[in-house]
Amino acid sequence: MNREIFLSCQFKAHRDEAELEGLIQAIRASNSLSGDSTVVAEYEARLASHFGTRHAIAVSSGTAAIHAALEACITPGNEVLVPVIAVPMTVNAVLQAGGKPVFYDRGERGFIPCLDSLERYRSDRARVVLTVSMWGYPAIDEALLEFARHHHLVIIEDTAQGLGTVNRQRFEGTIGDIGCFSTHEFKLMSTGEGGFVLTNHEEVATRIRSFSRIGFDAKRGGFGHRPGINYKLSSPQAALGLYQLANLAAKVTQRNGKMDRWRQALLAHPRVRDFFDAPDVALNGYSAVLTLVDAEPGLARRLAETLYGRGILTDIHRYKQSYMTDFPLYQPFYQQGPYTGDKRRDFPNATRFIDSAVVLPTHDSVTPEQIDRAVLIILEELDSLGG
Ligand SMILES: *Cc1c(COP(=O)(O)O)cnc(C)c1O
Image (tube, rainbow, N blue to C red; front, top):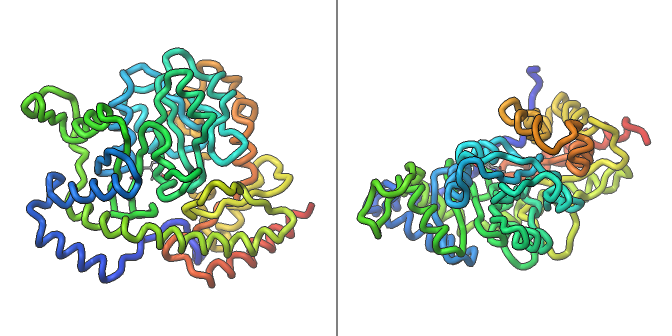
């Protein structure tokens, strides 16, 4: 299709002059452009202080962050509980660490796991619950912490999209045991490629740092004692990260402004509801998620296709597979074990989301005019649904 896309969920992060100037200055002043640079150490110190954790480890991507975190917690063959609504990067990291992904359903609120589903699908080889704060919405709560404590499960938060979301006075990604963040171009902090890990656990931090630095172990005299690969972030990326971190709050405010514009225009329609509304959560505004009332199977996907045909590219259209179990690489993990094989029965709450979700972009390059133009089209399409 050659139609003009006037509004896309994909974008190039906006960089102002001050950021680019700062980058050049940092490169000139830096003792090294590698991951061993003092700029990287400064970036890590600022991350830890901003998010209020004891340790921050800068790495080369969000996927690397999840992989390194898992390497610190599991041995090959261990089960890792993974949400059925996630992204391939999350599941690939599990496979890379030798873990066996076990897919679970979301609960009623946001992307917080359904505890019944965790209970039903896990076995005694489960070591980790991976939570994924899709589109910036919360994926963790007190009940999950309690469940994990009770069953001796480590909670690893994939907060690639949840960076900056505040969940009951704590940053998403600092509530479980380990938080994994991405600073890829599309994320709220953008260093092009990049990521970081946050944790309060000393031993876990040491292992993640060592794994992401080719197994370097200062206590034992250097390399060759521990496993690891090179997942270091380079110093120019860290320099961008320092600037991005200082601007994170402003970015959250901007995205929330766009999110409110979408909500105010679309919630007036009788077929539209808010996906998530909780007074104790301040969303980062990664995307605006709304849901359709009385959605029959496949409705949200059909709407996303229609919108694409009218110039609006949304995440729902871009991610062809909605359930992770639909990807060929992960299918085998769904064809064995405790499942019925009917996704609608195995993951009822995820199914409700997939049938009804409308995900709208709020990033740097979305303008109010684009939102208003898209709103008219969406309202037209909603009217033609009837009901
Ligand atoms: C972007 C993303 C990742 C991976 O981050 P990269 O930096 O691209 O490797 C992982 N999980 C989620 C939910 C993401 O959105």
